[in-house]
Length: 213
Image (cartoon, rainbow, N blue to C red; front, side, top):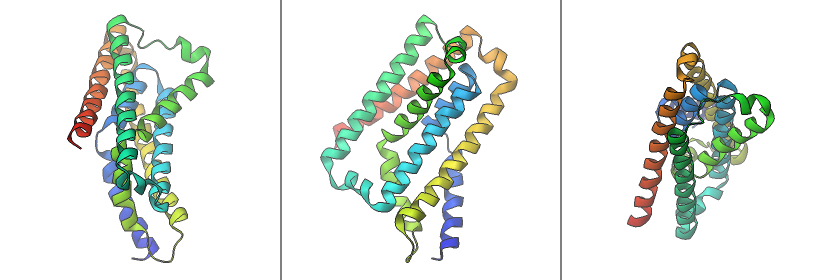
């Protein structure tokens, strides 16, 4: 496979993956609706950086350790499930006790708020073992002979991450006409509760997978 052919084929597959709904999409949508566009895009940037990490790791063969080492894969699953439970319970607490949709802390400390959502998006992606396993099995198929695996893998993963950022920007813009409604306390708490349940559901699925291994 020629490099350009490989790039175009990967881009087509990555585009379809980007449009597939999942936890990343839910996180960005909720953040855009309740916190505003800047935190949402920072979370999206963190997710894209996680994709870039997994892509480079898969190209270099580093993340193949997850398929070889049962202990490493199980540890990542446990950490991922624990983080999802933490975020899910935090969202449910916000839904039950209030506190969603308040923009004042973000406006008062924009740098801190930006870093918080960047790290939240990055951590959510890095602690998702399915992303690592997916890249291990998917990306190497698009590495042509004669190219630098690390550089070409970074190009492919960077393309996927850029597609994600464009998609997250579109989702964020889509919430703007409804921003006033979405930031009402009752609506914001409902969104927090829905995302909290989604995260707990993903965490439970990870726990079930650990139990079956």
